Every structure is written in structure tokens, then in C-alpha cells.
Image (cartoon, rainbow, N blue to C red; front, side, top):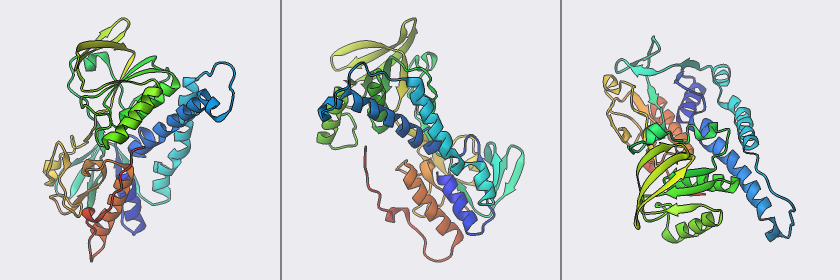
Length: 336
């Protein structure tokens, strides 16, 4: 989102723009975030409404069956239908932007290479986003796991699903898979589900998910994972002692980490660390020719903050006069 908004905004102001993408146009929101998650959440809501229709005075006779493949096919149709809005064709033909597919690496303070093609810039925006944090749990890699980047590729519904992380991402998918019929367990190290929320609100939501069939393991550490013939065995350290559960799939949702690797930011004079690219209140990096926007630098890793930040980047980079400060932005918080 940050890259698309910055590119379209700059092109709309008459700038000559090159947009570099190494994977899929549209970023997280279209491909592995908002769009696919809300699509399958809608199916889960429909299943829940049918299963509890009697509270509305509606009698549903016979078994309610969830066709998981049909749910996922619907999600992919929706994603495909929206994708032309973020497509290379639209950004090239409508905005006149030069699209480059490949990995970008800075070669100097005002040059970047993409798959052997060297580009010189007056201004640049780093908007490479973030990815799921993978905790260093012994056996996790060998057993295999899901994140938001591949969970939407599923074609078969896991009968038993462990969700590592009790934040918004893990929770919404835990509720969704439970309502679609999976046996779901949330494993959270903290003593509160949805740790960023008020405790009384979190307790209301926890009770709601428990009514959906979700099991909670709070104040629990996942020590290791083993791949066994009957599934993936999770070894847990709980307040009541050691415990183990067996599941078919593990969904990791413990946070996001910025994509700073492989950009050769040192050659551009851009400071960064594990928390992301360092920028000031005007979204400028330590190289004043280069700005940053979106999950690569913002404390709030959401589509709409990326959108607003990129609008500020365009104003600050292309126009003289007063500059936009990120700290002036009012960001309301909502978990739904």
C-alpha cells in the first residue's frame, strides 16, 4: 500500500516514477492480509449465523455443512476481482509509471539496481513492508507451519489447528477456523488474550471465542515441536506444568518484522536496525533524498497508516513550503 500510494501520488503530480516490486503488486492487504482474511471471515460469519439461527426464531433442519474448498475458492475469486486495481497494467497505463519486477538493491546514495538495470533517482521511497515474525522454536521449521503469507493457500481444512499468538491476527483466524469447524487452540505467552486491549474487553472477547469452541492456553510457552505420524506434536510449558497437544497445522501469528534485508541500505547511507528503517518526523531517512513509508518504518503496521504516511511523503518530497509531520497524525485504534 505504501509503495502504490507513493508511486501513484508522485506520478499524479507529474513526476517520472519507477516502481520496483519483487513479488506481487498489491502487497499484504490484497494478497495475504485484509482482502483474503475478511473474505473467509465472512464465510465463517455465515456458518455461525446458520448454526445459531434459532436465536432469531429461524429453524434450520438438517446438518450444516461447510465446504472449505468452496470457501477458499470464493476468497480467491474476490481477490482476483480486486487485483486489477493494483495491477502493473493499471499503474503503467493509467499513471504512466515504469514497473520493474525484481529485487532492488541500492548501489549508492542516489542509485538503485534492479536485476541488472541501474536507475538514478532524485527522490526515493523505501516501502518494502514487513513479514511474519518466526520464533526460534526447536522443531518448528522441520514440522512446518503457516503464517498469513501461506494460510490462504490451504485447500484442505485442518481438523486441528494451533494458533501461536493471541493478538488480533491470530485471534481473527482462530475464530474463523473454529466457526468453519476446526478444533482450534490459541497458545499465548502472556496472561491476557489480546494483550493490547483493556482487560475487561479482552475477557468479553475471550468468552465469545470460547463459545465458538476455541481453547485457550494462556501464560504458556511453546517449547518445541515434533513431527509425528498422527500430526505435529507441540510441547508446552503451562502454569500447571508440562503439556503436549497434537495438531494438523500450526499458524504463527506473534507479530511482524520489517523487510530491511537485502536492500544494501548501507550503500545508500540509510540507517536501520531490526525494528526497521530509521526516519525522522518528516519520514526522511538518514539520506535526505530517501524517505520511508509503511510497515518498514511505522510503529502502526496497518494499511491505512501506510496510505496516510505516503501522502505525507509525497508532500514533503515534491513540494516546497510546510512539511507534514507524522506525529501530527491522529490514529484511532480499533480491534474488530
